[in-house]
Length: 117
Image 1 (cartoon, rainbow, N blue to C red):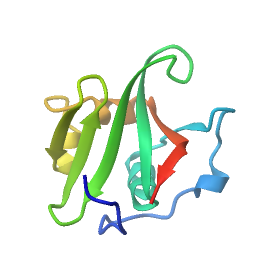
Image 2: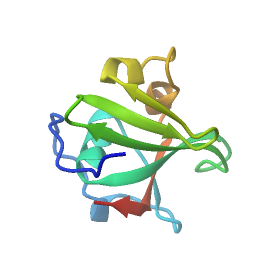
Image 3: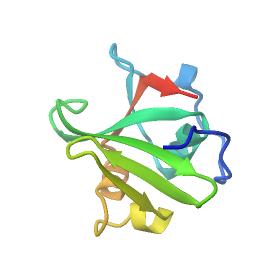
Image 4: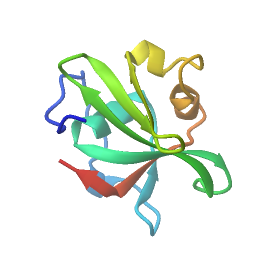
């Protein structure tokens, strides 16, 4: 996977990492698509999709970065170590992944402790 650099995604100003409401483990819910884009622009984070329980006691873990060169999202699914390279439209479609549905239902979680440049 390429080292993450500044992204060409169109970003709207959202909460900085320091302003985000976090639990003791450094987990924070991603509020919407613009918030998600902003997080991707701030560096690499680990994401979780809460499947059951409070703040994702049962979750699906993913690494997500935006590849500027290909203008695609690179998603690595921890459960089977599979990798997907998807457009934004594909990433939001249930046909390819559950990330779009997680954003709609406000159950996409970012681990602010797992941040790399």
